[in-house]
Image 1 (cartoon, rainbow, N blue to C red):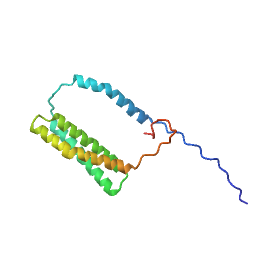
Image 2: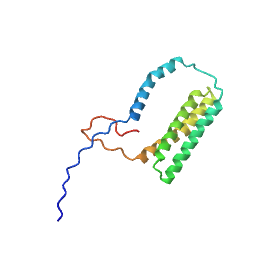
Image 3: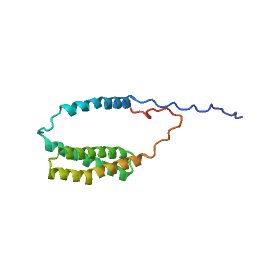
Image 4: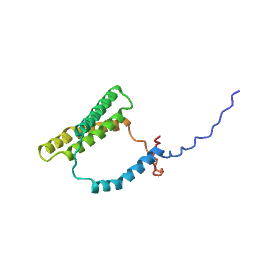
Length: 154
């Protein structure tokens, strides 16, 4: 004879506590804020860089690798695609910024601005939109929830 098996109702899940990685990132971001003032007031306005071409080849190599990885992963339907797309967007944005702020006045500056507005930043936006869309909609937050960091970063 089968007797009914009674179970207690599920307990509401407690909100996840932020992991040490998330707390470390927030702390590092806050520490960098006063450091920005130090940099702005102490760095020289110009300098000579001995390996300038290697630096730029490195940045553009990261762009190419990020764009190729994001595109290939997206075509394959790989769930890691948003990570590559977000990384590519970050490198493209940094490249656009550095191109513009390090360009000499005149034709070099105009070329950097055209490249930033016409290629690098639109590609960065494409990558970010692709990454965000691939992640899906955000999880709904209950109305009675306290503000907190969601998820754990390990």
